[in-house]
Length: 158
Image 1: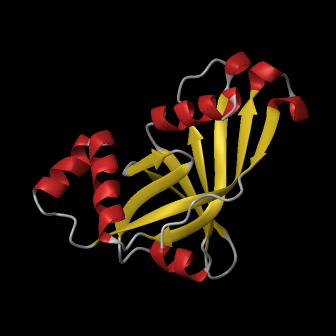
Image 2 (image 1 turned 30 degrees about the vertical axis):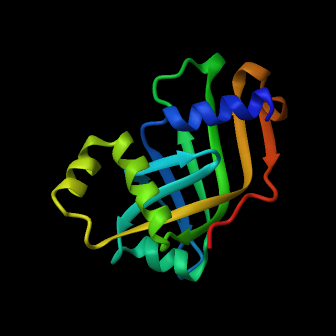
């Protein structure tokens, strides 16, 4: 793994909130902020209520983008990361247990919900990355600031 990829992994794991982009039935983008998420390498996991619009949108079109950005960055050192890939529901028990632990470790609020058995209507998704786009102003402006990492052969859990 390259130094850039290691820095990306560290950046993802230190992000407090993400923005999930899906596409609605009119083919329009829809964005929402998520706090109940976790990362495992470049794979993003998140939870949501199973009756939300995002679940229907992902079932209709599983290609999503997940946007990571830290707050209060100085302009010359500004960085963000966009991960585009395929979202799929996590259904296998072993992976579900892993995801619940990963999200609980990041979020005391989510952990409390788990402990109080308040996640009955919760569904979990994984986003397997296809492309990772890093914007890093310390590398310059314009095209010099953007690096695209094509992700291939990511392990799939079926």
